[in-house]
Length: 227
Image 1 (cartoon, one colour):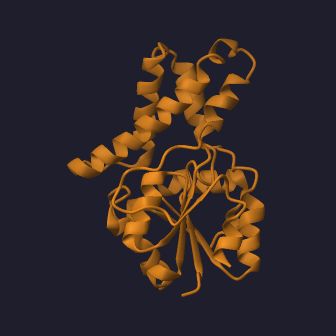
Image 2 (image 1 turned 45 degrees about the vertical axis):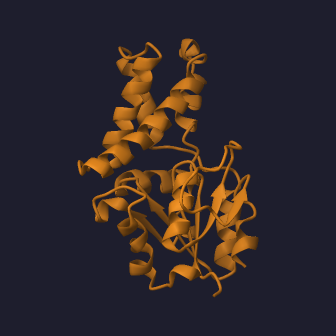
């Protein structure tokens, strides 16, 4: 069955999650942060994801903004910066203004010109996602933005992936699901979506029951896969 619907994870897939720490380090007066920002960005993202999984397993759901703050607090403390309230506030502010990866607008535009439905399916809370979409200027290239908050559990719970069919009325085989998270792409493949893993960092494949159908270095090849 032909692909009619292209669904994208948001953070790390369309939006560069390292941009907040990188941009903060480039600001005047934050020269002392420049040696810390790569570790902060890496630990922040890892803890953010770990906290979503742990909350899903234990049934203690909260919104993505809370786990984003919790992950940052852990990362700052790990780097000996836990007492810098001004830095914390600035990093959180910048997270609402994440940059899209350079190829994103052209890729989405090509999909729309080809008649494909395009949407985000994300752990992000609706207000966070709206901020990121508006900051990146891609709102007119998306048909919808779907958040896990409507079901109260984080990915990779199957009820999250159910949101796509419920919203667009498409069969699983009509969906191309795209994520930079190997575990997310694998879970979506096991669910029944056709999947593409955007492996920007060249990481090994996760050892999970299912594997992504396609692995890419960036998003430029998505329109061809979806054709």
